[in-house]
Image (cartoon, rainbow, N blue to C red):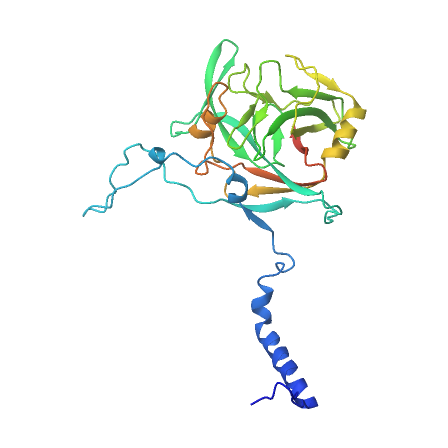
Length: 330
């Protein structure tokens, strides 16, 4: 028994022995501990949709799908409301990141997110069961189905395109359009959203379609207006308060000085994550309803997540700015 009044004499060997045991344990546990650190070099980074959709409202209990157990013939009973099964979280892979990645240097820096789904329209097929949009062309109407594409998709001249925007934070959405040229320069900055009768307030679960499905036309077309144009740059800005801008039914030109100021204050290092397996999925009834101008429906945690999630390190928590490039070819 140790005498608390008389310290025990410790030899050099006694002091070294615990260190040797600790080193042996570290060697044995090394592979397991490495699993909790950074992934091996070359392993693509991934995220899940839960981080984006967690602020959406919970689905109403009455709208959740329920199935009856299989009978003796192995057939499932019918669901009362015909609601599709609840999807699980979707996985996203890192598609692009800044060339120079640095950690935030100030305590004020935060990571903000913005969800953007780019749709390319195709003619309706007899097997389509999702949402459809009606297009009026030269006195006739035809049905089209929006399909998801990735953020860096190459569009052919004449393609019909629509965009859905979702923000997990409350704010006000503004969209600026600039032509992109082959030498990397851009044309004049034009504010194309909101317009006079648009509600640009963002909240979790609310979708904003550009153009809106009620607009005529309800899409925009990929056009090369000059020989050296290669696409467009769409700048999406979500601010905590409304900007003092003259909103009307016509695009409003933003000065180069003002655009540079916004990009410096609200921009940041952006990473683009693409949903795995999302390309080709069609516009759903839930997305159609959540983006309708006079609808109060919001996307729930069980409804589709955005195709592309942008994560931006920003120093000013009052706004987030994301530049999205649309590439065109003849």
